Amino acid sequence: MSSLAGKTLFITGASRGIGLAIALRAARDGANITIAAKSSVPNPRLPGTIHSAAAQVEAAGGKALPVKCDIREEAEVKAAVTATVEAFGGIDILVNNASAIWLAGALDTPMKRFDLMQQVNARGSFLCAQACLPYLLKAANPHILTLAPPPSLDPKWWAPHTGYTLAKMGMSFVTLGLAGEFGPQGVAVNALWPRSIIATDALNMIPGVAVERCRQPSIVADAAHAVLTRSAKGFAGRFLLDEDVLRDAGVTDFSPYAVDPSRPLLPDLFLD
Image (cartoon, rainbow, N blue to C red; front, side):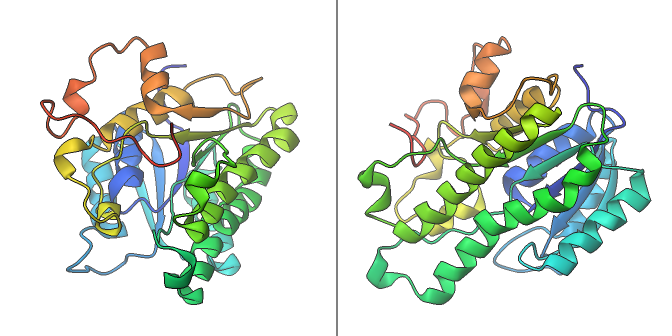
């Protein structure tokens, strides 16, 4: 299978950035996409809403269902899943993209921010999987793909921002557990992480990062597409890097993905 035509994707945080890029790549195949995100009205600090994203998905050739959804809220997630099934007849793919970030040490992390990261990242990914799995288990080639790094217990990734690392690694461990439980049942549960920092609005949370040394969200979208078009059977528990996925798919020139191909790239967090 090399196309997502007719497949239904439930993508969290798809109003902008990597989530939107994944949605648009699937839309070019003619996929059905639920854009589940909180942004329903324009924000001058963060461009993009579920409605503007839906318009882009439709323009790219897909079918879009914009749903205002805070993945911290169980009722909202269940309602979004129900709306998806009513609109498209089922769910083939869940992309856990939504994530909260706060890169600060323990003394500079308000508990409100700490709680937000745990609720959105690990708990949100688990909740969305729990809500989608009854439908994924009925799908022909079901996937759960979570934007999370390879698990690491190296203190160098924990000491500078324990709260964020805990939340992000929580997504990784949710992936590990769900892969063990549902991989044998035919659901491909895997994680994808960028080799280099991606030029998204999340960069505003990382002081001193030069956008010229980053890659475009399209590299993650193309890698996600390569993963999601694979056979789900026997394909679970992998912690994949975008560059490796695309290299395996035959890509040899990565310069088009760079914001500025003449500048050296910045490696993403949690990677040596």
